[in-house]
Length: 119
Image 1 (cartoon, rainbow, N blue to C red):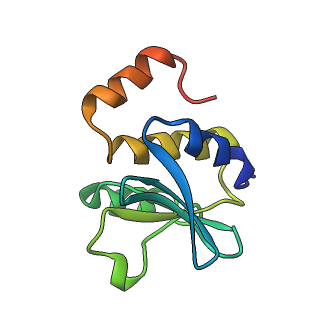
Image 2 (cartoon, rainbow, N blue to C red):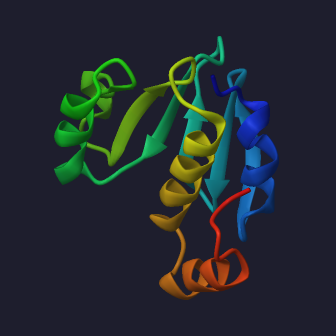
């Protein structure tokens, strides 16, 4: 089971990333772009994910992944149930979401510095 503390430090360590609280909800941002957001009860992690791939992700494991609300379907976004995610998987999802909002050269630099992935 993953919890916010499994990824909180990672959200601050990634280049150009910072935390923000909006209406009591923790969000990870790069500039004004939100790439991860947690529900108020901290049980759901919303994260940036390619729109064209999310139906397959949700269909592959509907207990773990859910589509966003109707109002968020226009965004590159999907939800994950933290009680079903492993901590390492949650960290990978955060890094993958971050990759969607940073320049490719920043992402490549991260890969060179972390060849084994997020820790």
